[in-house]
Length: 210
Ligand SMILES: N[C@@H](CCC(=O)N[C@@H](CS)C(=O)NCC(=O)O)C(=O)O
Image 1: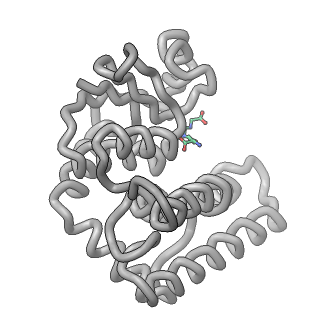
Image 2: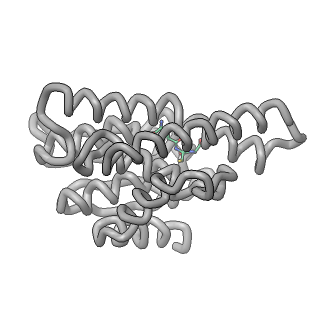
């Protein structure tokens, strides 16, 4: 059994999606980051960085494993099952490339676009323009990739698609849409229609209603 500590957030949703796609049993525990639960001592003992998601795999090889960082968790789950991540070579490198692009590019651009637009105590036009234009540029880049191939790292679904899906699921918070990116829209609709994605999204949304 894998315990997942999460909230209804773009980084959290990736983990239930992967677990549902991989058919791994898990228990989902809500950490209400709007109420500051990520800073409570019990949660800091799991992640000193005070952010969701976190997993605890009590059946990990070599003993229980507590793991943070959504991209690292996705790699761990893929390697545990031998699915959604090619074992070697160029196909694996393409997935890792997209995961790094997600963690260093898409995630920060979307997160900062949303935070500066919605939460800044006073307007910071340079920051809003900087992160909005970077986010739009990244959407265009993904659209070009998805014009050539079915999924972000090639012709098959991988954990790279799940990584990107998280922030694209919460694109409205960041102020983005798919109006100018039809290939990305097609990819998103295809993923969102998958039963595993639907189950994970419903369970993740429910965390904010608890
Ligand atoms: N790089 C981290 C980012 C995690 C992250 O930023 N989580 C947000 C929710 S999506 C969070 O816990 N925010 C609470 C806070 O910053 O206090 C990952 O991919 O897991």
